Length: 101
Image (cartoon, rainbow, N blue to C red; front, side):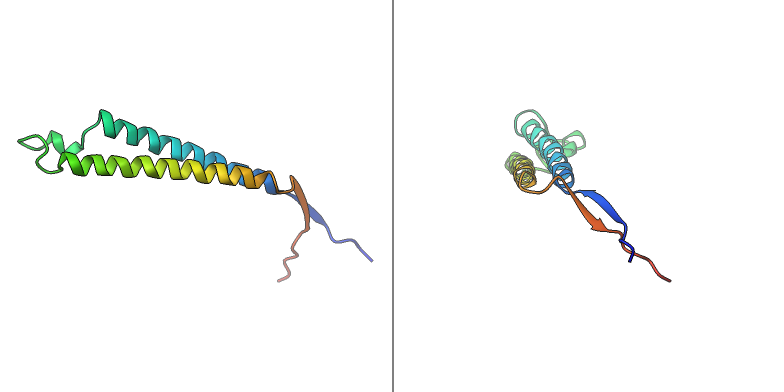
């Protein structure tokens, strides 16, 4: 009787990779939201004859707030994935699927 071949899979590492991606993406979105709230302006400003014609200032601040909330939500998901990864086993062994044609 032969023993089926197994492979090692990094389970906790996959969750930590997802956490890192969420942190990076959330950080970028939060920084962009902060920039838009306090220093940026829409690109439509460069093409309008009068300031804040195409996009009002209230609309722009609302959009920047959405970017900021989205960034914090992604960072929160990254934190949740990291905490969950601490409960997962580092490695698991599973049988290699046989592909018979």
